[in-house]
Length: 196
Image (tube, rainbow, N blue to C red; front, side, top):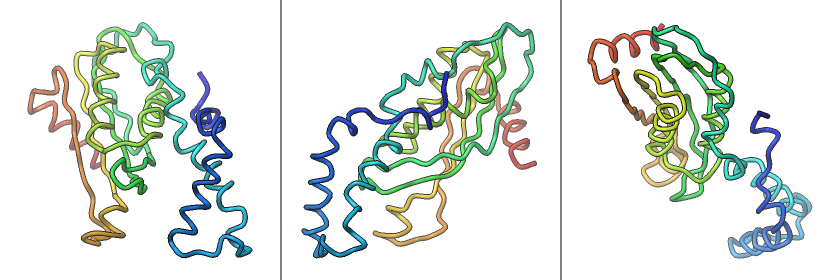
């Protein structure tokens, strides 16, 4: 399956003219001169950006894991530091960070790049960090049927850093635990390996 960069949000493409019109109207409403040289192409640029950053709506995240492989490896597999970018559904402000995924297979494994594609499919839409965390864990559990999954997501939210309480550098950490990761020793092993 192709990477997320190959997808665009077709609803945005179909509604390009309307979106550009509305972006122009918003610029006017905030007091900008839409005829100013630097803003002439802004509505078109914003629309092209929306095609990309909302591409997750074009993909079924379950299908992103693609082909699985029969493999009798039943030890911990970790893919960490998967960078993601998303848009807060409350303010439409960016948030971004890293996702760490650990799972213990039970006869099926996914290609490691598929886990990064899963993160992209889930995060490239209006989201909240808690839902991203839960969706990744649930989809991994549903598709791979591993013995267990643990997902940790770190995020910096511009809606909190650049506005409101204005606390830049603040990080939010969320986790989801499924299956055998309810065992505290296994959770501790996963978390200690993340620090290395």
